[in-house]
Length: 119
Image 1 (cartoon, helix red, strand yellow):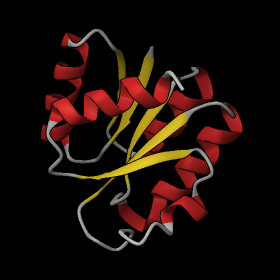
Image 2 (spheres, one colour; image 1 turned 60 degrees about the vertical axis):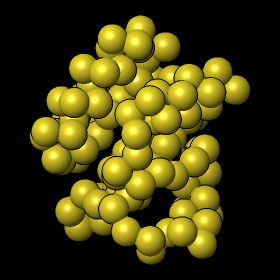
Image 3 (cartoon, rainbow, N blue to C red; image 1 turned 30 degrees about the horizontal axis):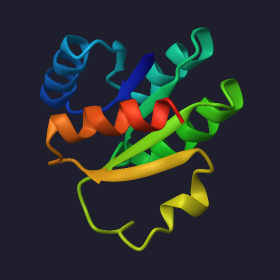
Image 4 (cartoon, rainbow, N blue to C red; image 1 turned 90 degrees about the vertical axis):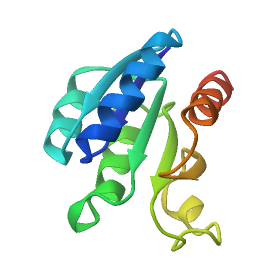
């Protein structure tokens, strides 16, 4: 199972990547929108963990491109605020499976990736 992590906060990206690799996932990281587009253009993924706090609303564009390049990709959104707590995010990202706070326990994120990438 291959997972793309898209996050511009490098310490969290490194921490999550190392943990997910130890849990048996194949992980590719993108530390910027540009990195995400280049990676999505050249590789298919089962799941993508996407930081919704990327600059200039870029996360929605990245999710659109991910679905265009890989219609079966499962997306897990990460957010630092309660803006999407009412579920409206599901209206904007058709392949969204869940959204979690950026303070999520890594074990819970791992479980979500395994669960949604297999369904």
